[in-house]
Amino acid sequence: MSGIDNLPSLASVIATHGLSARKSLGQNFLLDLNLTAKIARQAGDLTGCDVLEIGPGPGGLTRGLLASGARRVLAIEKDARCLPALAEIADAYPGQLQVIEGDALAIDPLAHLTPPIRVAANLPYNVGTELLVRWLTPKEWPPFWQSLTLMFQREVAQRIVAEPGSKAYGRLALLAQWRADARIVINLPPEAFTPPPKVSSAVVHLTALPEPRFPADAATLSRIVAAGFNQRRKMLRSSLKGIAPDIEDRLIASGIKPTERAEQVSLEQFCALARAVLQP
Ligand code: SAM
Image (cartoon, rainbow, N blue to C red; front, side):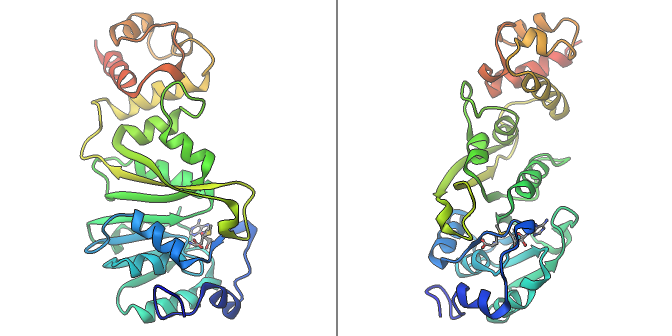
């Protein structure tokens, strides 16, 4: 039995169900239920919320989310071997856990969720970044989620919360910070996982803002930021040449020196430039 519920320890769940970790699925499991409960608490008040969990694996975080009072958890897992272990959790929390077997990148979970919705996941890093970008770029804002609590490689987490002038500052920071509050809430060493990955990890908590921090057209902002950071060592008057023929004037009108580089420009300035570029 574990400290947070009456279910067996995760080590025994893994042994019983033969869940040897597969590298191809990015399986680095968290076996400490006190830690998964701590991550679940960072997701905010889950009472009265549906929680979307991607990649529950043997169910450590799932159990943390349910023990923290989530109204319902919808978990999407690609590895069918995990389903019997997850079924045992569903039995212990009747009507509160639904598991869908499949690839989170190919499944639209919205039909199965009722607002308010929070998202929590410890995912393989490549899938995590792709899902984060999708969750931050829906057609309409505010998005379906109130918050995202996601485990990343520490280096990726630092790119999400980075400030102008730092090496980590770039497209991911601007995308995340334009429409959300983002902060690192837990740092984890490789040994927190079984098997341990090569690098350290961090949990990032993002809260959706009701509207973007500064007004801008999403597609224009994205085009400018992509052009600026694709050639991040170049001055903006040169890297943004393709955005508008009179880009120098528009940079100046936005309060940006044409000789600056993208990494020195704040989110507010990028948004001002996105507006200036659309001026006739
Ligand atoms: N949440 C568990 C934990 O914290 O111990 C497992 C984390 S493990 C890093 C990642 C999990 O995501 C694995 O269970 C893996 O099978 C699953 N997974 C990998 N790719 C996936 C995908 N595309 N869609 C859904 N689940 C996926």
